[in-house]
Length: 266
Image (cartoon, rainbow, N blue to C red):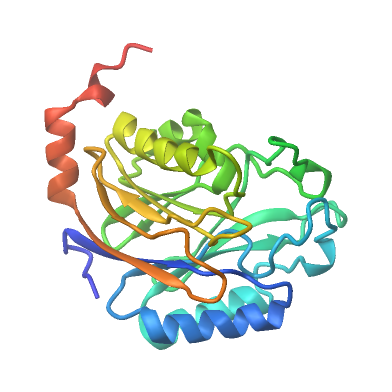
């Protein structure tokens, strides 16, 4: 594993489908980490991995858990067993029992949570009917000498959040998603991930649930806008893992060559 002074961070993005059975998903986390964590410093699962959304408009409140509940505990145990850090999405109990938060949970060498800010009220969906939006404060966490910013799925369409993360020091933005399939959706996904990386001179690692309901195409884009690795659409039957090593030297060079963050006037 990387030390705090190591300039490299080893990422593993697990493009796997979550099921409607929370116990099956907890088992899947343990199995997939055992099979694929390797020497990764950060292993990332998609949005809503504790339990899939189900049919559009479904009530997910019965599946909401606290941050010390079964799913987060499974993450912590798997992270400890494999000496790594895990990040995955869940539904979290909140003040409104009928509308939980859509939350990312990080456990391992760093501990954090992020409640999705932008709810997916678009393309015919109404996520806000079933979920509560999180607070507007961006979440950036320290991991092995890297500043890691957290976003979820639809947040990708709002450049203000990515910029706020970078203003708070983010060098890597991690984006778990369940990017719903449809016309032009893969093009939007790839374009927006690349745009957030280029305009902020930051690494972006985006992992989604696979086709057919979702888009797959998990990828990592570097601060120059180069796609370092990308999965295909995938399938629920066959998880894919995207592995990338990111380096501070590349980040520094991108910001030297393209000092757009320093040249901003607004």
